[in-house]
Image 1: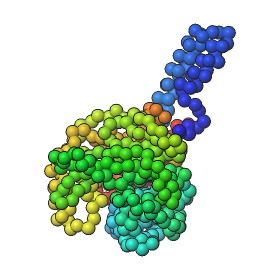
Image 2 (image 1 turned 90 degrees about the horizontal axis):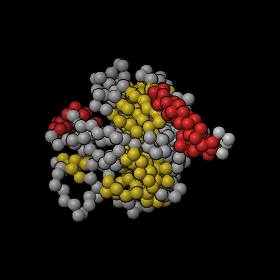
Image 3 (image 1 turned 120 degrees about the vertical axis):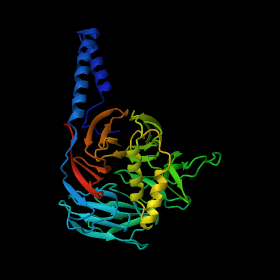
Image 4 (image 1 turned 90 degrees about the vertical axis):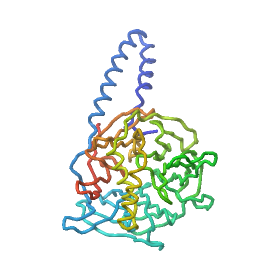
Length: 402
């Protein structure tokens, strides 16, 4: 499932050593005593390895929404990726542009713009590197995946899914490094359920499609992102439950935030299993709710300020959940390792790496709340909010244990 620098799991290794030792002249009793010592030493090594993983506070690259001389650089970063040469590409869902920045954070070029043309975007919702150094950009309104080269030219584009039997456009998207895509569209409420609160959560399948958008398999069917009914519209519920997807070459991971468990499905066979990755149970505080409202409003563009303020007051007036979700994000890194990302109430971001059974094999912390876009071999890309409220896309150095 994961590449682990070529070592077998600890139980497998111990079982192999025990069987070989038991057949030797020293006998089974002596072997047990020796292997107990090996187990204690190995566990101590694993625990110490967790402490070695760290993320530098000083960014390798920092891209500010507003330049030092007060000029707007981007409006709202909905996604970002880092290319092999260190270039950072930021997707802005407010003006439909991709912006390319060099290692020093200086703007190199702009690509796209709002529109329905082949080189334009209506609503950038997601970006990812799905194998190679090209960038896959999902346009939610056009319902098309556009593949962009490192130089900024659009290589090709295709509908997702390629047929028209799925009525709603995909809202949650992930890709593997082999180029496969997984998506879940907006769900439909269960007709047997009556809506007795200002919140609703639909149900929809998660599909796996190939690099041309052709549907291969329905992997799972379950709840979608929890929505809040506000006026005549709806918005994601602040601190509400949402479905997250992460995709490795071998498995598809789906989390619904109903518990600390996630679903893991084999890409080859379609078989599934449940994996526990979190045991967090923390009460939600008022500041958590206010921060979540701000994050929802950051993606709203078009209405005048007075309307935005009305939406803000309506969202703040909604009942907030009693408990925070177990974790906020699922990420599969460039090494095929599964991470969970949790924004804690104390302002830090906790990153945990999980083994095949969900156990934590390493963890690191980032000062401040940060949404993670990408985790590479030795870097983390994400967006955080500066003290003055502006967005900053940052690339931080990740240091893994040997």
